[in-house]
Image (cartoon, rainbow, N blue to C red; front, side, top):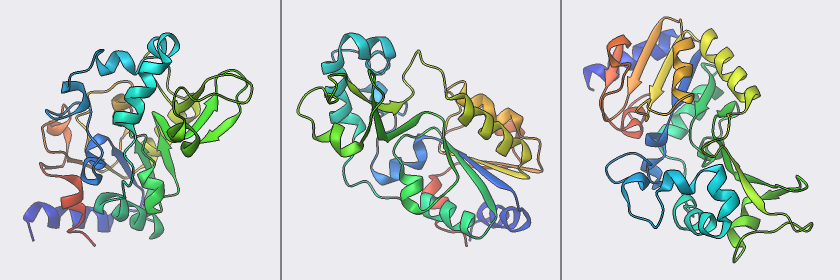
Length: 239
């Protein structure tokens, strides 16, 4: 077994309050496209840039265009949890992992069995009417042929944080609390380029900081251990 994997296993074994902070790289091995990688959504060509399509003002002005993009690129039918999701769920079951703080909106951590998942950018699995607030499941939105409408006539939108919108204050507070109490923080599958989410990792003051990402990040120099590899590949070697 690789020396860095052995070191990671050793750190996990001696820690009891682990928090995992993850991004798009956690889900790419499940077939869900990354947004910022070379092959990611932000480097593909559309009539409008994805950043613009996924903004609150664009959603209000062009809901038809928003939902075309949503069905084409955000919904990945049949996506299943990978080795990273499954290992984290197992760590939580064993009482070692206290929370998963994720920037992802796909719900795969919960599908793997994780209970304490803090979704900084919301989730595609929940939807609500912008007019009356009535809740709808993912199937309702995915199966609508055009812009999904509530029984009251309002547009039903996914419960995700769009550009120009603030993160949920309760989720932020809980994330800060979990990270600040952790004795080990594992950052995985994220370039740490998206703020304010990425700024949360600076609340960590525990013993072991580990970074697992295919490309370098701004915090590599601060980490005790840096592994430049796919997160699922790394976690599949642990017990």
